[in-house]
Length: 303
Image 1 (cartoon, rainbow, N blue to C red):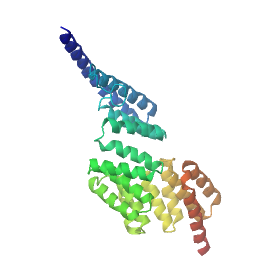
Image 2 (image 1 turned 60 degrees about the vertical axis):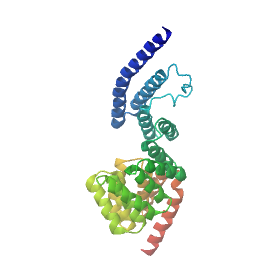
Image 3 (image 1 turned 30 degrees about the horizontal axis):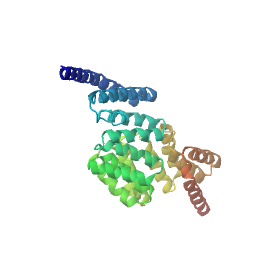
Image 4 (image 1 turned 30 degrees about the vertical axis):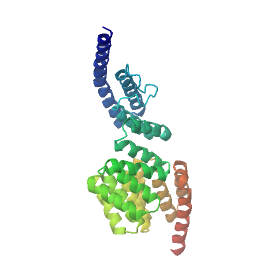
């Protein structure tokens, strides 16, 4: 009789969990819609509700199991919660709460360790924070899990480029473009690598390809603006950089490039304003600002 009661209780728990799961899927869809619309606080609230529900379902399914890890909130969560952790982490990135985002990506990886997305997103935060070794480890792991995960090749390429290995970065971008030939951002990133390698024709072609696919892609406009600056056409650079900053006013490298363009044109007041904004947004760029100043001074001395 007691065994029959336990069986009935377990059946009821699983039935309730199944019903809750459908409602949870709808809520998760709504959270992603809010994320896409830029309602970050609303998205975070809904993703948190999804996670709370799936934590409850996970614990219900383990009811009566003396060995279930119910003291560990992550391990007791349903695997489906990985998407909610990833979604909330993306929203936290958009809010510039990067350490909190890493916590959510850590949780997603614990819940679904065989999925590449968690490693990719965590690697991207590490790259943003200039933790290059950790970024490389995460991108490498994501690629081992999914050899066709184009974003991870791109992220690894960006890491290699920041570490000064443009040639190795180019190989990763080539692979990413092979996998996603319609992805405008990938051409822009490859253009950056080619520009570092002094391949003027190749980088120009990549920026043009990127802007043909997406005329309002800020990183491509910034890249082409930097290309114009590299060939000593600061006025043409300004047109692209003005538009890039209009589209993405948080891009510190666009402010850096525009500041250099203003220096080259002799507009020191505008240059100092942009370089101050560069440092506010990206304090790690101080050395690049100093090097850029010397380069602009050398050009001016030759003119």
